[in-house]
Image (cartoon, rainbow, N blue to C red):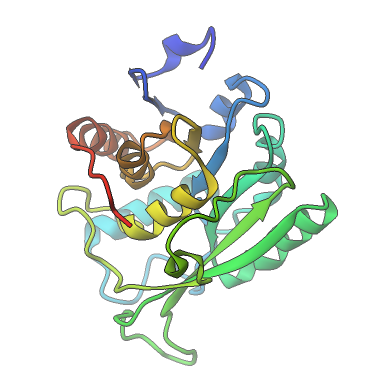
Length: 248
């Protein structure tokens, strides 16, 4: 990263992983050094009691308690969105969110004259809970792009739909992360909005799915995670992963 490489817990020519709070580590990243950010920050849950309900395993409930204590259940994206402007060559962001925060991301994009779109992951196997509301069968991804940011147009036509239809779950058995994202979806975004040897940052790395996708695609990767358990899982997962080519 720079003179602060000694803060990195795992580093090779293509991967740098940092255990810590992204709001403390992002200021250490040099200006205009990041090509793309792809991340899934903590955000509000529909339930007023985000720890209760459903068929969530006890270990996953504990993880959500940790998120609540660290961030609260009213994560406001404004500070995050502004903090990454300095480090990006051109603003180029994919961020998972829920419907309650969509307007905040859109307002930010429009106030900065950035292009934006809403992408959707549709899940045919949602948790069967619909007490006073429809099934939670989708996740939103907000894509924010500054003019001049990479957008590759030479991929298969099917990669450019604004929806992605895939069952929830099916992640690595070793990660046990309650909100792990589907590797195919992450791969699609990285292929479209970055190039070989570009630097992709995930400030809320979780179990390291973005890092695995970057390793497959020969992108350089910087990951930040404040939960030591998941940091170690991500580190082990990325270190042990053997790149797969010709994914799409």
